[in-house]
Amino acid sequence: MPPIYIAYLNRLDIDELNITDDEILSAIEASLASQGRGETVIEPRVHLEPGVANGHFNVLRGAIKAPIDCAGVKIVGDFVDNYRLGFHSELGILVLFDPRTGAPKAILDASGITDMRTGAVTAIGAKYLARKNSKILGHIGARGTAYWNVRLLNHLFDFDEIRVHSRREESRNSFAERLSRDLGKKVTATGDWQSCVEGADIVVEASRLDKPTPLLKTSWIKKGAFVVPYGTMSAIELSLTDIMSKLVVDDWGQCKGGKFGSLRAHVEGGKLSEATLHAELGQIVAGLKPGRQSDAETNLFWHRGLSLSDIALGHAMLEKSERLGIGQRLRFA
Image 1 (cartoon, rainbow, N blue to C red):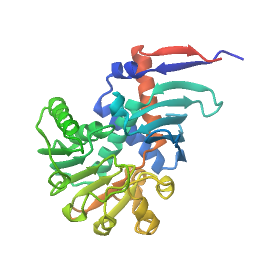
Image 2 (cartoon, rainbow, N blue to C red):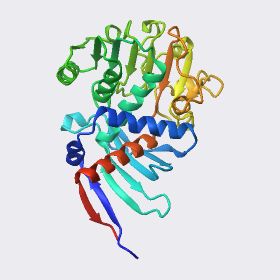
Image 3 (cartoon, rainbow, N blue to C red):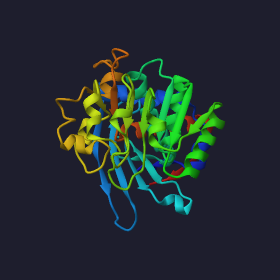
Image 4 (spheres, rainbow, N blue to C red):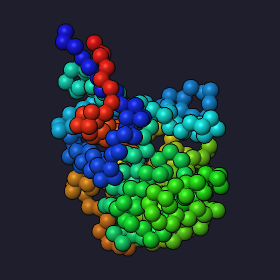
């Protein structure tokens, strides 16, 4: 058998790639279009709960046809108390495979990939479903994927006002300071949910709750807003879907099942179903279903996280690492 080599990119390698906002968005938007055209395979995510800490593992699997031409599996932990140890709440790896032989092609640190691709999916959802002149962002949550949500949304919309909130004062203040420095504009840390969300053009709910608690009130959402709730535990009221013009998800197959997710109760109660669902985002990106059609629409996008996004961004990073000579090459067989 000929030798098999795999590329290995650790977190330091991925930082050194210095991948740009446009590179991230381009990779993710292309993968969404591929999904919409039926050029992908998505296996519903599964969870592993060790039962020894406040957290669980997510296992995501999928494949994308050429030109990406990769299958992949990502395993990422979601352990909300990791900050007490100085760790990120989400730590994981992505393995890319040749879909024709099963040979492994690469292993990449997936913590940064998870954050970046989640932010990109949020931003691309807004590109197609939010008002083009959206100027106020209200973001709940300050850890994990939060930074890339705000950064990539601002890259597309150049907000006049950005508000952020999280449960711990020191967390939200340091988050606002980091964003202010990196974005070159004022970012305000608010002391409560209402002052963060009320009147915002785009609302992102990325809280990290221990149990479902309806902290985001439907009455705070203004007409014409775009709302993205995607916490593992729901923070929204059942009535939120009642005010929406369009309900959009990333993948209905994984949104309609499982025990986690911000709209789990809405699925179980029939408020979000195949009958009420407008589209998957990939169908909109591919031009098969319409996105926002008027400024009067109030739209919602729920994304659970796609293996395809991980594979696409990992592939883009792998190609860039080969051009720049970054990373390690390991003998597998």
